Length: 314
Image (cartoon, rainbow, N blue to C red; front, side):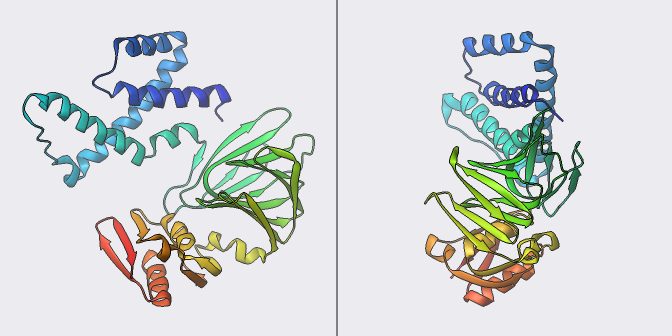
């Protein structure tokens, strides 16, 4: 697994790659980049890896006729600058769309529709939900997993002398000899315990840590800064491992977020009022067509396809 120094180097390489794509980059910035390369041979190797990722992004553009045939027609004397800026913007956008920065930072990424299982060095197991990513940082005294996005289920190997902590945004979830699930969502973070218990610290507040026991789910609202603990059926909470979600009066935005994990394009809801409409039932989110049919029928809505984009509307 990459060390903290290597992960920092990965982030720096991604940053320099994007800066170097600017046709108006200053001489001072170019000099700083050269010094960064000269500081450590590993910097050069890491930057080369980032360039290969960018090359993959360019190849993705060239293989898509709709993108490859884009003609940029800027006006008069600004043509060379405008053209280069447009191309740089397109490639940079593709780099992000191709998940370049995340691929440099994460140790494991699940693609659309994938739910892989990772066995860690200590024997613990991690299963990722689709479109999720984690970074692993193990030392002699601690075991830390950063959930960079999405959702993961953890089965922790017993080693109390090396605490096992999952970091999801501002939430630190420390295992107390346990199996548990963490979902790092757009609006909230959910921690569900299926065996034993965990200790949850929020926003760096160690004095106000929360114990979540087996059969309980803690939901932390990112906006309200509030946490609710409620009993939950483990089979219901882990329905995602079967490509499903079981919801009771959940907002449509939540359901769509889960559907997007398994969809190669993007599903959006037309308007915040519509996004807050409530849905109940067991939904097979891994099957986009079936899930769309369920929510549109349940709420009396329509789904309009525009290439890789699906818009849910009245």
